[in-house]
Image (cartoon, rainbow over all chains, first blue to last red; front, side, top):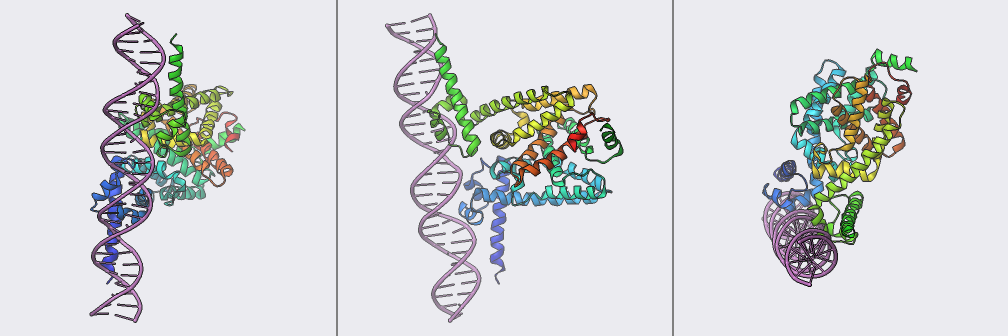
Length: 206
Length: 206
DNA sequence: CAATTGGCATACGAGGCGTATGTCGATAGG
DNA sequence: CCTATCGACATACGCCTCGTATGCCAATTG
């Protein structure tokens, strides 16, 4: 019976990830002492180095976990809508809302890029951006949006969402700031839509 | 004659900022040793702590310097165009191009937010975002764009530009990636436009 | 010309990180 | 059933970096 053994190991990994996630999320990556948060999990740095190589390795594992959760949430949101476009807009809104959560904002959106470099190069290949690109691909095939590179559009939108979220989160009056941001955001999104008026006007102008 | 004295002090400050800027830009904030780069300027950490308080203080000074340069460049670009909309589009393009520069990308866009927090709260109140918001305000008064909060729009656009730039910079084929990004970016920008589209905008979008 | 201020260097202590090494229990082969 | 090996994790050590306290020297000021 070699199950208990494997389970203990998995549990140790999980405890380290959880402790790291909490520490990174609350005090930030740079200020999180490995001695401290491994001890809070009843372990030492020895276990951390054994499983993750170094502090960066643990950060990667933490981010991969959060990224998977975000991706799952986005998929649920987009699948729930009546039509594809609405599903996509809901997905964007959900993305902004997730970016408002302190843990996600700090670990994935601030410390992550600073420590691990550009997110588009991460091993956990930004599941949630891929999810958005997928939705955009369907919309393009459907003819709802103009012909653009879906990954490019997804990245631009996620970038805009991210900044909007940070701006809102640190605002004096998050409520009204949020309204402003969402309105401007929707205006930008309409640029993607293949509606008669803008396109016709564009061609006539030529 | 108290000029030489003041000049020496200003020169020391400038040397520290320059050394820090170089170190932060090449190896990153976290990896930059204060002992090393102050020594490279012929000084010690004593001078740094005297003038800037701590490592973060120097980073702020470096970012303020870079931000001022960026703002000046953007103002020149937007003033050079034939009409306001064209000037704004040029400004956005220039912003993306600046975000491609490794020094700006690393110091202002990656390490800065991680160490100093959300850029919208910085003392150097993001001059360049303010510049973009100004341009947008004129466009709105002119009736060229729809009625949105200009600061919100400016932040969304800068966020999108920033991500686009990082994506391009780390791409295997920056040339074609750039084309994709710019096309998608222009599509989003058209969401801001009232119809009819000003002449010139269409060709650029295609 | 003396006193004081301020710019900057030196010296010291405290963590934090990474590595090398040790220990113990579990698994596997005979 | 017994033993050898391997892997999971802890402990111990040295290096580096940061922040502060202290000291020195030159320049300004009255």
